[in-house]
Length: 400
Picture 1: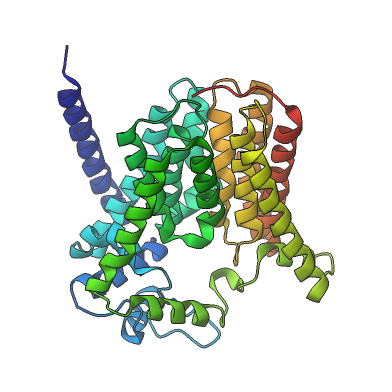
Picture 2: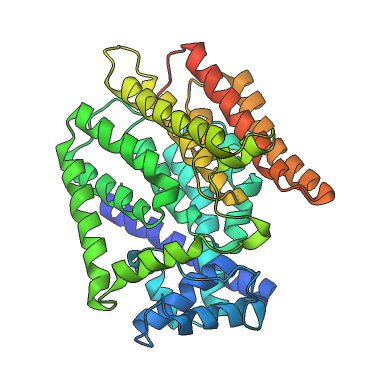
């Protein structure tokens, strides 16, 4: 019988070989074609910070990104392609900065594919195989994978976190709590995508008295925020300036920086103070709902899963823009529910498989009609219907 350490080394070696072979295959298929536009942001910014000694927020780096994506400088009416992410996000892609873009792109995509296939298989061994292998087939997930968008590694980190902490009832050991805190801190590279997930995780950690996890999360987050000051001394101020500038121009696909719920309300003619009030009340009601689900006195263990679904909905409807890959915030909770051993199979077929088909249906319809809202509103309503069903079903959840 093999020792656990040897078995782990064999697994890591096998994954490394598969990743390498997959990278070679992707590189051969793509050649010099640059399809990972979102990844190009981070690769260029990483090279500037780690190799060229420049600030990734500088106009010079913005010009490099525009030249790489447009082949020219951006017009005033176009997306300016600025790097507007916290500097510690560069730590995730930093090792790839020394590779040529074509190989860095291929390796990044290979890692995404491996994560989307391997993690569901490992984390949910009792779930139906088709459920575990279907996550990568959702249009927003595939879109994020092709673009090299950073929503994907963030959501994969949170997938591991929720499956190992929130959904199960057992208390994690100290070493595992440290690891979970590390994973949660990684999510902070996309604050607009994970704020409600992080809030829910912190509330549940207090409720379950997993203080080592809280300390680990706080410590790693502080460390990640401090490290970039060693190579970008004024990164916090520059980042905030970039965010302010980010709100002033049109973005890819014709989207503007506006909370998604306000965009939805404008479709029915609600604008101005009335729409703003509805959005504010929705956010307040959602936060109160999270608190009630976490801290109410109840023996019902489904509350964390219901709260997770609510957090995903809050993130998306209050998100400042709405490209399809932002819908990963809604897909993640539904996938975890679908992968649980006791999730009702008819409901899984209806909501999870139906959501997968819907994701491609709205993509095709939006392209044919030239109406972007079709990409965003139907999946939101579908997720809301699933969450309401989950809230009202009052079934006992299964364990992973």
